[in-house]
Length: 426
Image (cartoon, rainbow, N blue to C red; front, top):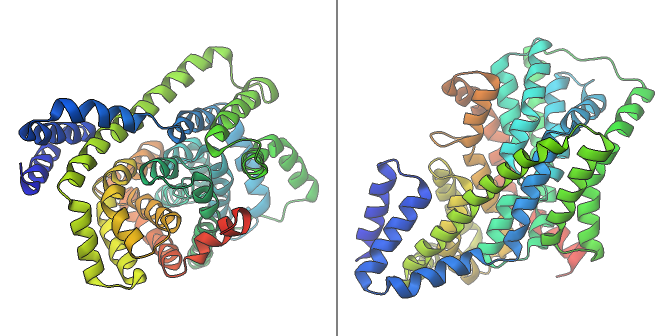
């Protein structure tokens, strides 16, 4: 079976509306069957893809995010963020962004952010007179910060696929994540002034202190995770176990808003979500194996190098490609499919895999805000009870600051690499 036939079959299966993992598996199976060695390749590739120590962290970070969502943590984070920036013009919109930055250090997922904080933020904003579609748009845009600031499930999957350092990837996401928050808040300040949004009185110090104290156990989560990793107390993979254990401690013992009877449902949701990731990783590994046997990565690498020997030019071209891919593929699927194809060219041009990983994940997070796939848009349309097209239209202006940050980290790799080099060495 030729590469063209193989890709054509896959696209046909996608067009038929089959689940992505089914299309990847069936197309790969057909290609291997045509080559007569399916029984040799299939078990090896599938089991090898799932047998990853780094990937073990994914279900633990997921369970930590779910536990945070159901144990009152999100309410405390929102209240503390409100005391910090609620006094700015358009204050609740700024609270939305700051809350996402804080929650990003716990969940590692854009969808978890949108679901966990989304309902609270949208209700608070609409109660104070903000348009519902504006509240949904701010929530959607700020949710993309979640997978950039560590911990990050997409970066975990990238690390597994690219055989890259998850510790360096986590540290590499800190500065870009803060830049995303700053860019969004600058746009919000401009929009709030134009639209005449209200500002609240500056809070009294004792209010800030009280809310900070109430949120302190939750706020310690990122410090515990990053501090423990940097101190060598546990690996980035083991940090997932620590995050899950600490989230359960918060919910069951400290806040006491998570009940023992809630745990079976929480674990079931974790297993279901992780099952989706595992089956995607396994079938995508088989898909990448077929492409690799056909030397597609080598051909693409040669084409990209022929396009230009300047790494920045090639990265900009890959950015355009990934922004288009993000409109059509879910982020995790895009990572496991495209990393084996693009990474040879990236390494050939001397681009740091950690830099490329952060650029790729940010690209695909922007894709969660673009139709027709746009998973965060779908989630927020349900949470806000708005038509999907309304959420798409209202979110569009917030793509500008996010793309600006993407261009910044593409053109200046040190924005990504400075912190990993400072902490972990060259």
